[in-house]
Image (cartoon, rainbow, N blue to C red; front, side):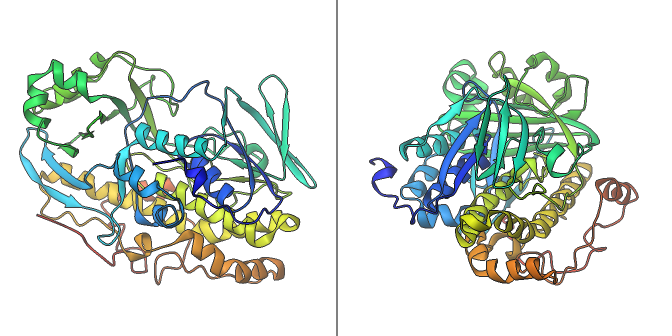
Length: 467
């Protein structure tokens, strides 16, 4: 295939030095796209090595348009790790409920095991000549006029023209950006998350071989009134997520594992294949991830405009609600273009334009994730897909964050400089954004209120359902 460095031609150098904190999917995507846009990139990561922990990630067409269009060789590499995006639903006893197809039929989403997709991005970045500096943990963020920086554990400081906090929900950047920690709202639930090699699992289990040996890829949901198991496989790996009531061991970190014996009681009485899937997990491969909500935060930029948050650092999503990976990658396509448009002398303006272009869209996606989660919960209660009509539309899938930033930058920048309103064009058609809270949505859901009917706008503009 050859090195991508032989084929990707970066745009003219902008002179902007960018420090990215965090080598997750958002950070790696940003590093590649920022390099392509002519910025000089440095990326640090607290982990000493990339972890194999995780499960499945879905990236809608809006997140991958630039990559398919402008990243040489990306399409072929992505195709090699993709899972067929058909969502196959079963009751907990194994009865087949139906298959639901998500995404834009003109540009299907990337559905993949997180670790395989993560390594794809990591290898792609390295082929561009950019190494992730592992084992460098950020303890704090700071900024002065003209630059931002981080303090590493141990006291070493690193500075850059712009610092991007891509270090997830636990980012210490909140102290500078918002002035206080962002409180989490407990959901009362958690998920066990696990990913491991497929070969040994099939070799050791005739039940798994009989069920899944015929498939190259597979994505399944087992739904019970009080739980859900999500299973996926590729030719190399398999993974599962299992919902359960939160416990003292649940956290929001890719660190610390639990024994499979802790998971098994939650699938007692289910289809035996569910127990077999969990039993296939190797030691030290299952994490217990706490599901907590956070209210939308309108500001992602530090006071002096030298630090900006992306992905889960600015707008976390529940893994069970979806869209988190998509919105992180949309951030990564928007920000480099805003910086290219503004130039080195206007970095603070570039960050604020990016923030304004993105916030309402992201907040709508966060709300959409909550609403679709409620629809899935109803399927679990009813035991049927008959009334499942997931909310999704062209406003979500057809968006192009890079082109939107290119086309809207000047108008948005002028509105910021002049203090006049700017009307976003990448959100739900006809919807007028109003601030909302997670606790408010949870209260409405508990009272049986239809969350889609109480909001204005056309959220649902397309439906891809296959029997």
